Image (cartoon, rainbow, N blue to C red):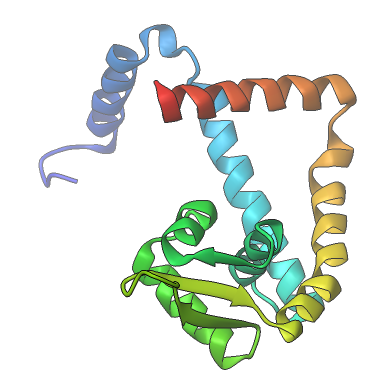
Length: 167
């Protein structure tokens, strides 16, 4: 904060910027609720999974993405699917390799491409943690919404994804 500005001045400036950028502040509360819900759910799911299984949510996400893709993916595709930076994914995969849950290999026919694949231990770890994670998703998210709310939320979020991806 600028040393000559009071908290009220800053609040007024930011309020004006929001009003100019979101006329009538349309969508502001929904946007803030989405961000807060996402952060709260991810933090709680990570804590619960770690306490119950010893596996971090981001590690679970890597294993689940690999399983959903048939057991292996190129690093670039895995980074896109897990929403991790390439450097963050590289460090995470290195830890998972050290734990014996995945293995890395050069992609056939492409010296630069790297494949990440689940090991038998990774499949076993995922099998152990999947029910714990999905019970958390059910308890913290699904059970709190009725069928209509779930359908509306899914439709709205899919529209945003498509518009952001192809718009």
